[in-house]
Amino acid sequence: QVQLAESGGGMVQAGASLRLSCTASGPTSGRYVMGWFRQAPGKEREFVAALRWKEGATYYADSVKGRFTISRDNTKTTSFLQMNSLKPEDTAVYYCAADRAMITSSIRIAKDYDYWGQGTQVTVSS
Image 1 (cartoon, rainbow, N blue to C red):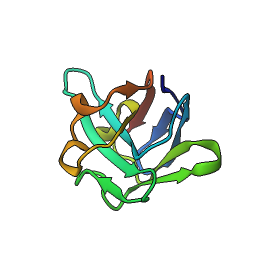
Image 2: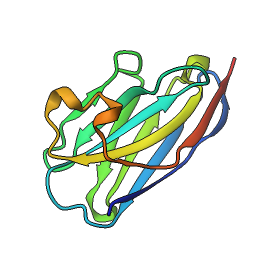
Image 3: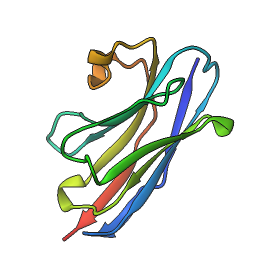
C-alpha cells in the first residue's frame, strides 16, 4: 500500500514562492505517476502538475505553466512542486496523488488516481 505525505504549505503574499514536497512510502515500483492537485472552497479538485516517475516527463495545467515546476528526487521517492509568482487564485489545499500505469489522458483526472496525501494548505494574500 502506497502512502503519501505532503509538506511545505503556508501563508504568503502575492508574488512570493513556496516549495511543496510529497514523500511516498510503501511499494513504489513500476511506472508510477506522481501528481499535484488543488481544491479551493466550493470548487472541484483540479489538476496542477504531474510527472512520470520513470521517464521524467512532466505535465502542467495551463494556469500554472511557467510559474510552477514539478521535479523528483529518486533517492528519497519524493516529488517537489516549486511555486513561483503566486497569485491569490492559487489559494487552495494542495494534494499529492500517485498511481501506476496511467495513460496520458488520465494524468489530469483526479478520480483516476488511487493514492492520495492528506493535503497541505496554501494561502496567498493580495
